[in-house]
Length: 204
Image 1: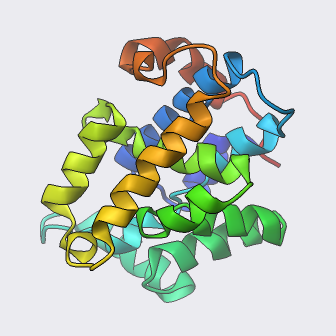
Image 2: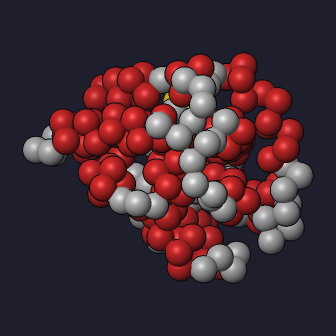
């Protein structure tokens, strides 16, 4: 089953599809320039295309977005109102094992201290690539941290917020030590050639 079939199955809106495709692109650039230990890149790239399947449950939709509101409610009714739990249930439903589900459910900014201390580079890279993609496209990690600081009070109000920020920077350094190019050279332009690959991958 190709990814677009899965997106249709779960009624994934276009902006979420584009976000996950861009995360796939960032991971593809990292893979091409990876000089570290052997990793399961096939699995990782599948996870990039699935990691936000349930995010529609947290969308703040306008009244005129009736189709999306109905889609959102149907997803909430079936998978619950928590985006991480909903995504995990969807990924499990597709047949992925608990390890894959755990990676996806662990890659949030609020878990960055644990991620930095983990030895799981699939988790680190998925988290980092996700952090590099803003609503406007691929940016730097510092761009994203600035965005979090200004748009996400659920994190900025936490007493460990600066620990989360510093741990995110630590993850970038950890990945950079195994990549032959500067991670800051990954841009919208540098991922374009990989985006068409995303729709050809057999997810199942």
